Amino acid sequence: MYIPLILSREHAAATDGTRMFALFRRKKRSVYVRETAMPARRLDRGPNAKIYVYRRVIFAVSILLTLAFIAKVVLSFFGAEYVSFELSGNAHYTEVQIYDILAEQLDNIVTDSEERTATYLKENLSYVKEAHVSKHVMKRLLTIEITEREPFALLRFYKGFKTPPVPGTTADRESSFFLLDVEAHVLEGIEVEEAGVPVGERFREMAVLVAAGDKLPKVGTAVQASGVPLAVDVLEIALLQQPGFAMQIERIDASRSQQIKMQIEALPLPVWIAGDAIESGLHHITLLLKQHKVRLLQFLKVPPDTTQPYLDARFEDSLYLGGYTKTE
Image 1 (cartoon, rainbow, N blue to C red):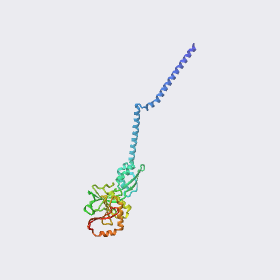
Image 2: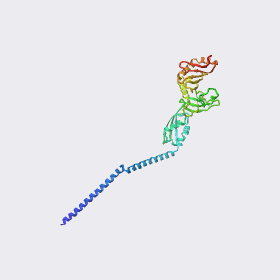
Image 3: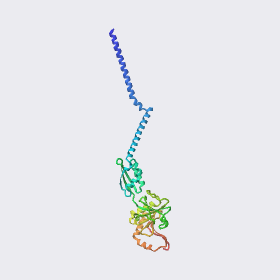
Image 4: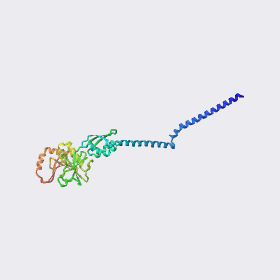
């Protein structure tokens, strides 16, 4: 009777241990499932998922703004006055002049784009045609390669006139002079003497293009007045095809495209050509000066009965001496 009692107690203990072990395993498995399932619930499309994403986005933006602010403070600490220049291709502007032009932009010179700096130079320096800008932030070095515009002709502009007045009259002195390049871009305004001629020897040999209008041309921009681009084309074609004749051109009035008036140094009267026959007109005048210049000058020595003589080269195969009366 004693032995069965002992077996019953051992069996009960074993049974209780088995139950406790099973219960412990169920609890451990439940905890494991709950822990591994939490991230899945966080990344689910539940209401807390959007809040989680928003918090991360706000945190990232805050970091970027903080870094940008710190970079701005650090760059400003060095001061724009320590920026150094390396210039090339500059003939009309010194380093000091370019530094003065960029003075208002030097605070942002490190963070501005190269294209923006180049555009600023072209807009504020009339001789600058192209500018290539490169920057070295750590060395605080600004390298500028400049391509400058070349002076091509003088523009004599009559403000308040519809067409240029007759040379030699009182109204002819009411004018302003500007220096142009081959694209009719205004390089600078020219001072004039009391006699109404430009100050400076370098302008003595330049051809003068004449135009009129309500507003004076603006330095740093292309001339918009009627006839100026056409007059530039006439002079450019003459320099390319008839360079010897081009050096004798003193004045070009292209306010009327089919009656372009030129004053030639070798002739005491104006020459007319047409805008749609520039090349042929220049060719005929060149041949006339080479072959019949002496004869023409002898004929012009006798004062003709005329109001305003001119040489008309607007036709394809003929030259006409106009302005004379029928008796002559």
